Length: 141
Image (tube, rainbow, N blue to C red; front, side, top):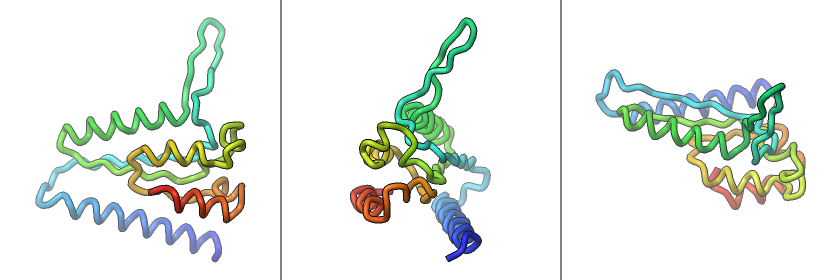
């Protein structure tokens, strides 16, 4: 299957998810729908430290991503809106934590987060199909 066909399938799947999601909203005409699209985590479970001249701070990481998404979801739903979280993949490798566990550390944390849909990127195949199948079979992704 070529890249164009895979991309088309992914776009159709996302469209079906959005349509299903909107269909559950009933007769509410002006409901707010927030769609959060994430991806390319590249194994960063922990934040990284950014050092500037007089300041240093930590940014990114799965903890920050997850807590920010949950906060946005909670706020959106409290205002009567709907929330959809779609991740584009490229998450399972890129850091020592992810390499050492062959993506399992990332997959376990992702499984605790309220994703509505997750697609596979090329990094999910870094450890081979057998490892990827094992990660998916043990997770609700």
